[in-house]
Image (cartoon, rainbow, N blue to C red; front, side):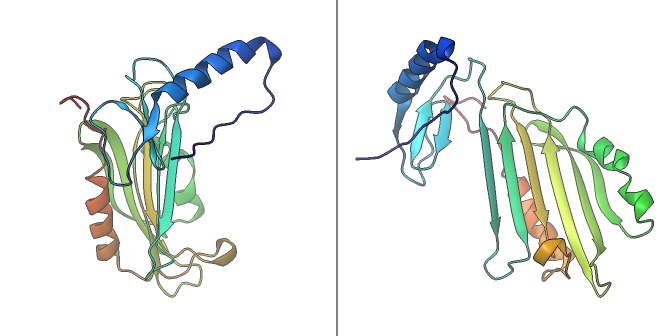
Length: 202
């Protein structure tokens, strides 16, 4: 009673047999999943579905979720999990090399920055506050990231970000929430990020 749609385009003729075999493996492993169901076995969750997979075979998976608060539409959340790509350099090194502080000296206030382990995953975080474009208030950007390992489902590259003051045409407005409120949201979510337990193991 459920419909799942998978597709690929521009397939080379020499790979058709392998691609069809892979699709058959996926179809054999896929099943319906209720919205709040967390399967006990290892695998990959999709909307209303679950693809059983032991995580031992190298593969490409990418999931991205973005949303805004209904009562505070300028406050946006984004979290991604990627097995196909990882940054070569840690978060804080990339931020330093971006030269933002040199281009806008004294504008950015670092609330906290450094290494942070979340549920066994080593990563880095940077919590920053900066002026709105019109200079009448502040906005925030809180980020945590773990680099992970390419093609290792148990060590995905995860990037989580809360940012505020999101305006029209790239304009940064004044955050509708205080830095303390944003930080409370950030802490509540970042501490919950984990690899789903399978068969009693993390």
